[in-house]
Image (cartoon, rainbow, N blue to C red):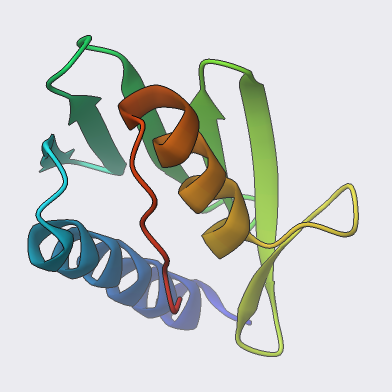
Length: 106
């Protein structure tokens, strides 16, 4: 995937996350700035941060339990460590930090 394709996929990913957060009604604010999408849980001010890493064509997710790296494989953002997909990791992070289940189709 070239840089242009990567940037387009990440833009689509972040937009889809924002749309799903908005539609879910979960009490989470989001802000996109530069290459970051920051989700802030209103209940406890904890954050989940997604960042684009264009040099290595990855998206990184940081939550209270640590940092995770994802690469787009056949349209799915999959962990570079194997097994987990970004949609599941993000859903789990929101459940742990906001206490609400939100599913993502990303």
